Image (cartoon, rainbow, N blue to C red; front, side):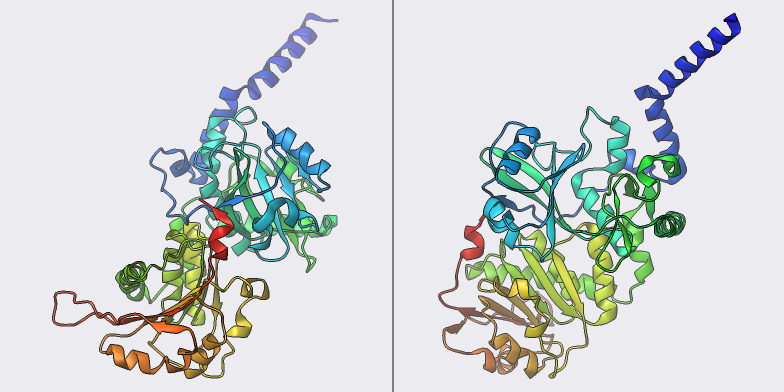
Length: 455
């Protein structure tokens, strides 16, 4: 053997070691972040997520001191568990209700639960385990709250499934941070379908705020056709869908809204003090939004619903005009609000409001709080609400309405067991009185939604 060959092999081994040294990896990630515009993600002043309240669900998951013991216990209980390096996944299955309890019943059908192996509190946990990735990579990905934005931006771009929530599953003394996701059951696409998906991904990376957290991603096994390391599956329509989101980030969530240029920012601003006044009235009469379903009918629903989630609502469903609904969905994605849906529609007397409520949600309406805007009152909407088992309806009048005018539109809601709280028209200290608020309450309302949640 010649001396030169030995030197070459030694140099090659040294090069491989240096390439995979944590310092070299971190330096490469820093260069990648600068080129991709992800430098904000590395700053300690990274934009805080204006988030919805994190819900904690009590479960019957077999206890353990580690994620490995929990997985063993779940399998012994007869559940299918899919394991990954940083999380394990419970797909929809018959015995899920028995183990997860109310958590399995309080999300849309076809829901799976991705449980992080990092079993710390949700504000301390991270998707990537510290022993598996560098600190720089974890900063690029962000906290689980930031990942909500990334995951649902992927969904908005037609590249990934919807993520319904970031919650905590409680098993004994353990609190397990969990992503509640839309399950994708299909198999991997063929090579042609995979290539078409990767081309759509390249276009999105070049034209939207979506970015990769890894350099040279085309060479990664996570993006190698046809299976992309098991991450690319076909959904019910046969469309390839990428089911994992830790390789992605959003350069600037605020720019997500630029594609939905709004004429309605004045409306958005004006809704905030009105909603605060509505919350105050609800509190004065002992109505708390925490752990309730909130329905919102009329203009401004897309602005009020995130505030309801911030106040602790469990689920939020609203109706608004199509353009406003699109802006609301974009705003929700950009800010990490997930437990909400906006129905785009032009409301009129012929609209079947009750039929538009998802079937899985109807059985949870006993404690629902309804915000009803009287900007465009329709008797058909009021008649539909009269058939629903809500707990309270807050009617929000317009400027110039008197409380008596507002109540005239709600006579159809005055069925047995419904009482009217004292009408309120608060003075703002100016010449024009703020819009009136009128609260209807149904006596004997259930507290079932609050009993199944623990906070």
